[in-house]
Image (tube, rainbow, N blue to C red):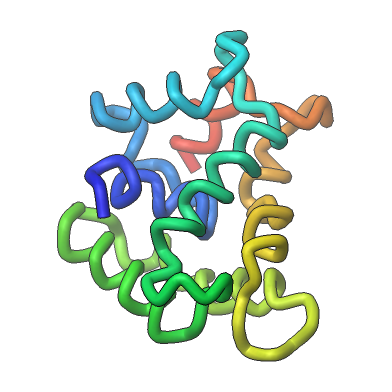
Length: 141
């Protein structure tokens, strides 16, 4: 898994980004996710980034994230970065919401379509995008 995948797993899996904002790698990732260069993260851009991340997290390349793959990804993030454990406490619930058909696995479509609740709530003006100001406010939470 690349450094950028590790750095953004918290943001894209469960919406935690407080530890990411000061990291140069996170800034670079922001620029890569912001494909139209407007200095906001459109939810469609986040979904495209989630699709790319899914492809990296799907270790056995069967088109499904299984519980072992999710646990392995979280363990890698925790091992490589100094994230607070509580940022990942909601991951299981988030995974449950992503698993729309209830089969215990998350398909690429389910993973890509899901925007974490924390990110939806951060979109205070309801425009379907996260501005720099909204991301800074999210970081302070």
